[in-house]
Length: 253
Length: 229
Image 1 (cartoon, rainbow over the protein chains, first blue to last red):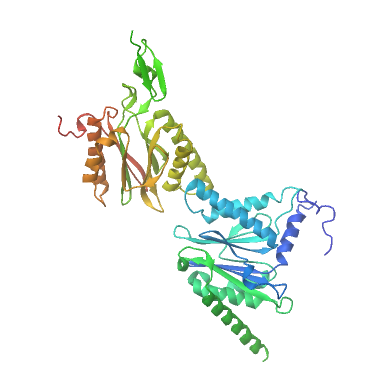
Image 2: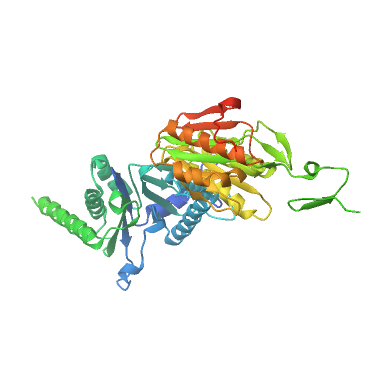
């Protein structure tokens, strides 16, 4: 990597002469080199898929869950440095239970996203800490607000999305996502889409060992965020692999 | 020689020169009531504030605004309930700005409850929090003395309420219309006012729905009368 930010990139409390905070940009680079995450909001729920790249065959496959429950109705996944991500999950859980303690009801996702983003942003202001190297994806479904999806970048910026992606295959995934007409599809259909897209953009050569983790929250789960049931997930993965093989066959023409 | 002792709450003073009301905390003795109906709530209260046996205010407004669509009925210590209502209104206004939409009745009652429970040893406050929000429509929550909070289809409170439990249980029906609720509350409060020395004055009624509050006042000979014996 060229040292573009020489001298001005040593701490988050410094601007460069052209107005950039390099530490925050480097945090984004950490996200870009990690396993991808894809999330789609459909008409009655949200589905999150995470590409779990395994660095060793010795890992116990189910012990490394990458999508977390924040509250009953909220789920969070992220792309980037795992340890940083776990801290953000802890913060989100604190804020969510704090809201419930003070106001007696489920935290609206907009509020939660705001609070978590403010927290992540705070770490971009001082030289004594470094920014979080994660893009956090928050999803929820409620009768009151319907399905909601937010993504928070390392800088603390966040937006609501119809579909979002982060990680190494971000660009390729984004192109695929733009083609999906999610607002007319149900959760079950979207699970297949998420699986298909992740398998499509996954780099077979560099990251041979990988696992796909899928979770959803929507009307179909009665507003509870949970991992997609084994049978639906494996069917979606089977279909995704099949589509890939078909495409590979076409390539030989 | 007999000593003239006056005890009010935790204060005991000895005085030949002052009456009971000069050393008494100001209480809203009270009858308060709230009923849910399909699109909103109806709330009602009497208008008497007492200090011992002296009527400090005979036209009190015990129906206090928290937001445009959430009101509370206050009973117990006038000072305590005013202070609590002010704090809740402030907190809720702040919350509304963060949320960028109207707060829920449940949120208001949770904040009431937290305060009434935390300071239960210092406060004397019985509060009914009632209003309308777009998620759950009309709701009534009651927060009695110890600081519990429960939602009920209708509820009564204050010293005057003890005299009308039978009337209310016998006359409440589910799915009443707004006008039926208003009649029900008016008659109940009138009955309580005629039997409870700490309740009296005028009947203040209000109906709250998505458009806000609609207040009425029943005074003088318009107050329903029943058997006077």
